[in-house]
Amino acid sequence: MIGDIITSIDNAMIKEARSLNDKKFRRYYGKFLIDGEKLVNEAVCGAIEIDKIFVDATKMSNFDYILRNFEGRVVPVTEKVIASISENVTPQGIIAEVIMPETIEFNPEKNEPFLILDRLQDPGNLGTIIRTAAATGYNTIVLIDTVDAYSPKVIRSSSGGILYLDIYRMTEEEIVSYCLKNIVDMLFADMGGVNIFNADVHNQNYALVIGNEGRGVSDTFKERGRRISLPMKSQMESLNAAVSASVLMYVLKGDKI
Picture 1 (cartoon, rainbow, N blue to C red):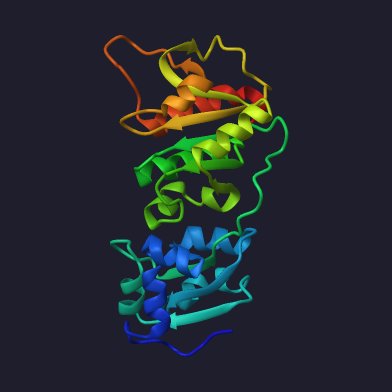
Picture 2 (picture 1 turned 135 degrees about the vertical axis):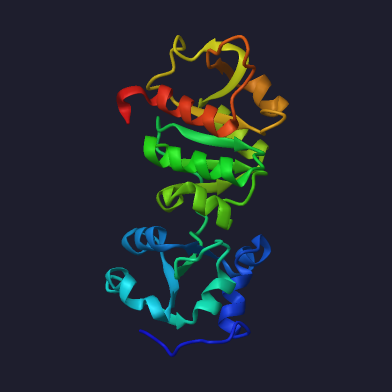
């Protein structure tokens, strides 16, 4: 269904869409934005519910191959209006308003490894980790006091990966209790840990814990978890959280990807 062209940035529907760039309103409305041709196409083709799609009326024909596969509401707007919604410097002209997935009980497949992200604050790091997780088959991510996974910067950095993962917000107590009860090995990177290339963790029931960019993982994970490390030349003390997480995901999965 295609409606009339909206020309005013003060239109109520446009104001609501623009508000979804703020975490408070994403949670209030239970929706978030996916911005750009590639991501919107993936959303339309993927298993995610789209409320509506805003499209620059002058570029409708460019996105015809996307809109043909979408049975919901298409809202044509002016270039000025699409720019008011988008946080991209150069908007591509198409934005999807997506329904946030419902929170279901945390119950990952037995022996399926998952990620625990402990107080990450950089949207770029979170997006990169989500992107690598989708690529390596870590289908479940638990967030503890971590930056909002549905912010525009995270969505952009994840390059569509967020569309394919189950993401949960839990407290440290909840996830640690789950891991202890279900005998899930909590692995976290630490310079004093066992060299990951020598650690026997393949095919075990484990969770990979990635800590805060500055402070690392919490004391609880240090006490309850198992230390692993990436070998590095002596002149380097550590890696960026997203880089470290990505390398560890690939090494831990080995040829099981």
